[in-house]
Length: 394
Image (cartoon, rainbow, N blue to C red; front, top):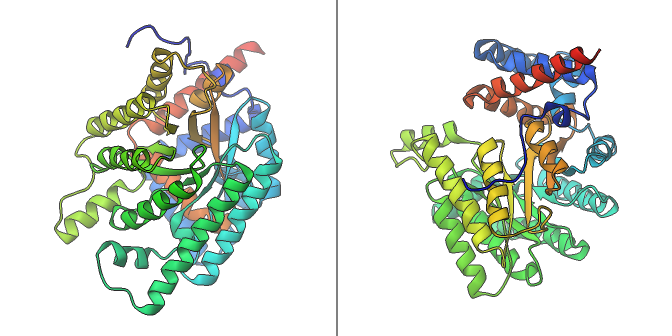
């Protein structure tokens, strides 16, 4: 890399300034647990069993993992965390993390709650984006059938139209309030119809600026070509393009399904190939910054640093409104808070919802931190460095 911005992801005093000693010790306990795969597996298995047996474990979960990774059980509780993050110039994205039931009533309820997050964001200077998960609003089974090219029944066609209307209603509200809407990515075998709906909504609402953002999982071999093709479509149809870039969240599931069904894995064979695709996607977005707004959703030090270098090479201000950095709440504070201190636009994904309902999200975080090489040990090293620094000051 050439001359670089003066930013360090090793500054733990800045990274954990918002955490009390007690909160930091809790984080140390959680990541110590996750850092031992067999202990983590045992703990998650115990939690799953306890929940299925309806044992009263919510209190314990709430005081540990839930408090660390989630904002609260409802919007009102989450807003306390939003305000706290805002004091350090870190924004928040209210992420209603309840996995919706696969029925119309569940989809409608999730859509209504998402509309509530937009209303709340409109009233808060610290919530610059809203988000929704497509399978919270539409049936994965139905989307899979569409991608497979199967003929829909009349009822299925109506269900698809209702799903699109939910997407549209949320994006229309975002447009009305000038509030960008992030559409999360899903499994590869039903991502195509989601992309099609999102591009249609971009065409409708992104005429003046990027309101609707699509998500690209760069561990997929198709992601970078898709990003380029979708951008070309935006240019051809004269609308702005919103892209959220992530590495991806369903790697094992994707590979297992491909092996089971006898098709080529849609996932890059190595981490290096994924990293290369991710960084090329960042460069593509910055090269086309006149029309693309990008969110770098990454816990990777290098990719975040690389984006700051790209911005500097393009003579962009640190707080250019077209570029955002995002991490999950409870993770990679060394990236989020040091970028924010340097004046970059930073947001934390802040999940909320009833403890029992948010468990699938929490279990994914545990599995992710255990499986991603070095993730939990990196967190642990930084947490312990800060605890040691604080002890030294006593």
